[in-house]
Length: 167
Image 1 (tube, rainbow, N blue to C red):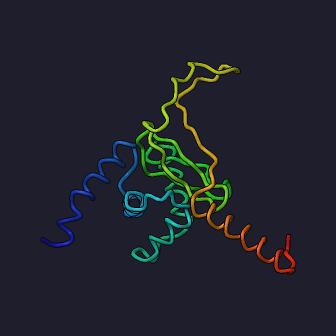
Image 2 (spheres, rainbow, N blue to C red):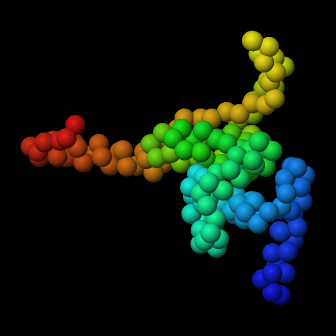
Image 3 (cartoon, one colour):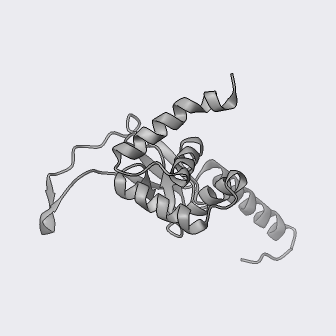
């Protein structure tokens, strides 16, 4: 089976998703949607652009940003906070929470089964209608804990040996 035939169902599904969202199925939009489907690590917009540059060398950063903004506006993906410094995208539309490592900025999906939430109120003060609830946990991941623990041990070792620390 040729590579084109293997990708055909994906292509059709992506075209249908774009059309259902009220967007034309342009080549850049299809390419961005494909990257979001493959890259489940909550990519930053620049990471999406970098992934696309390999196969679509003429695609501009601006096109990727505008495409992602259109996807967010039409519900094809979600904007997530992450470390707060960059536009990060979540292509997983199933309801779930996020845990954001405050050490390295890694974002982890947390299944609703692990931490169910009560139903939201219909309205909030200032006549705000609630359309959904997302929980974002501030965490320190295992890698950052290990790194911090190793740094503390090294600092103690250096201090015991009569050295100085930069603290």
